[in-house]
Length: 414
Image (cartoon, rainbow, N blue to C red):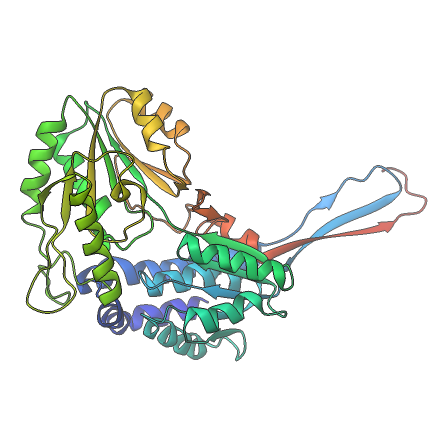
């Protein structure tokens, strides 16, 4: 695994270019942030591989017992198109550390990174048959993985709709275990005491990073009424310098949506928002003469019952909403079927502690956003799924606990 990580570092630019060509991701972000985090993830779990062990048990009768942590077996990984390389190792690294073999089904929109990573894994010495990549469509290859009788566990990241199908297939086949990291409609709560510049930067980052194609996107931005007008003015000003264009251009902040289907879906939601009565402050139009580029859309006068405030859009669309009290902010933040992530911007420790314990979401970022780390588990509440990625918790879904008990005779103590 450490050799695999070294090869990822050595081939960083090739992987970054594949991500940009395949998924429209910004090349400078891939080379500086995304791909370096991929090799770090592999090294993190390489360090865990020889530290997985069971326990010696204290039994009540004349028996001794211990537990073994055993690999669950063959794992099926079904990964999305928004972070192809990162999602590949997010699933494969802990499964390899646990001793599992696996079949990876990459998204049909962006399969090249997975194929190249499998090539590097083979070069690193991972034996044939341990890490396998099968490309194809979800309704054929994905369905086959979820329903296969010889696959012991399926780990899926994608939409809640498809997550239901994965669970159904697992249940009707061999009752394989399932881990799901699904959709989100994450809130960012900005309180009156927040620094306006910092809050505006975090709101833009949370909503627009990776062109909004990220499951933890903070697409619902709640701003306390005391700073609302000043923050809106600052957001609109900063959004003007958000460069949309060629993802290979170093000055670009946002590339094209992944494909025509996603591009049209995002534009249809922007139209829906306008029809429902939300006010479009900036952007929201196709950008450039060709390609699937969209100017970031910032809406205000959004109500909680509007579709743009309820549905996961997976595009560069921000919904601004005003609140008065902490109680109102908490209540409205939780008014969603999802529970993947949330953000809090405040300088008051009491507010940060109270709100972070009140929001039902798997990760809460305070005065930061999109801060992922190999050691920090992520995963959903409610309809955002269950099971963890990152951190030592990610190993649990790929391991089984076996108890071993034997009698002991003439023991002087129990």
